[in-house]
Image (cartoon, rainbow, N blue to C red; front, side, top):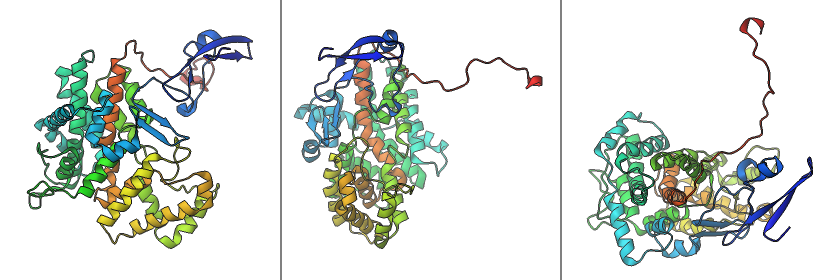
Length: 435
């Protein structure tokens, strides 16, 4: 075996084959097993794809052991401290940070495409008033292909670019419309004189009798800073379930709006995008600060089904770098917008307790980004059923970046995972009277 290959032996048959190692810029190499079945007559079995690389990508890199997250090579800590969400979206989509002129042009195009078709606004009336905002997000995003079908030639780079721009631009408008439909408020049009996050908050909360933005277009800077930060931190996260769903749907040649709608559906799962909402549900279950030790004990008990939500991470085995960044902003938001809601006091007490508990320190079960993001959104008056929608706004930038990358690569093949069949062997049909 050379250093660039791996030899695999099928002990059942004695056959031996050599497979090339595929290496990225950094990170663990992967064994290229594309010919495994042909060479050795077997497939691999990897539930959850924990050891399987499904694609090559130049967008995001994660080192879970070291707590590293890079967007196009830039550490998430630097982007969170110095960049804006719109600039990060440009970076993800285009591969490089924009020049001053490129960023201004990008912002202008985002504003230009932020409107939604008037017929699409009427489309919302087909949803029941108490429909979950995520159900509306899935339907409305998928319907965009019916409005822009003349620019869906996915072999045309400009059609791909304009489709991606439309989704990034329109998703805050659609999200705000979902919320306002659920509460019976009139829709608010996007404004060309507001930034991305400012526009969203204005579309969410502005009323005819009470404007969210004052005459100087002022919104509390702590609010906008927190929103920008959470959008940056959630913009992409490598081959997670929803991004992989977008890529799998894209492999069929489906239009980009349908692919992103599929990603939204995957994100809706409580194990994925619904995690920060689950944190608040857990806090409500704990109830009061004095019950924290009781629930900490339940979390440590392997026979107890209770789970401490918002602690630890499937990928990050040491600490979640996004949580380290978000913690400071969470405390800043709570200081800026004090509340008598006991949930906030409970959350901070639980955080302090867990950070000092030897069990959690030993297991490296530190608060993750979901623990803090739910608290921040609640402090900003974002309704809990909108938390996953907020995730959609941020992650759309990542989804369209992966879609654009995938569609630009030659020789794409439709995704087709294999399986281990556990059903009946061949058997003969029995007529109904003899069964």
